[in-house]
Amino acid sequence: MNSGFVSLETLSQDAASPDGVVCYGVGLCFASVCAPAALSIDEVLEAVNSRWPTGLDHGWTVSPAETFRTGQPNPCPCEQDSSRVHRLLEC
Image 1 (cartoon, one colour):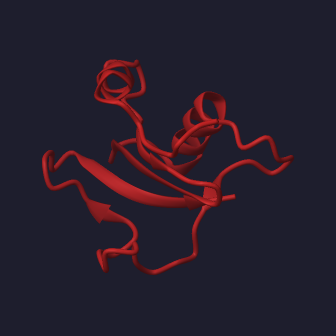
Image 2: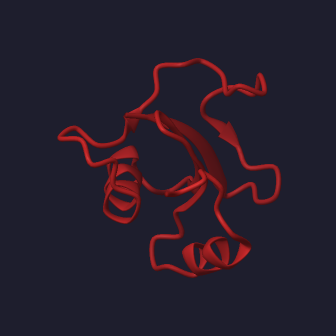
């Protein structure tokens, strides 16, 4: 069973993937992703749903939550790369 944590090896592989979408936190109902800001939300959802499927018919969708659990706005700029953005997804 997946613990909800993503290994550093997985993050490195994801960052090297052609779309650059990284899922850095996956839980039962929520996922946190870091993706290039140039990608549309549909492109981000396609990447996330193909690599981290929920097993549900509707898959991952954009969370209507205005903030992450940490209080950061959803979406928000990546702290490490200004060309990327963090988004909260739900299923």
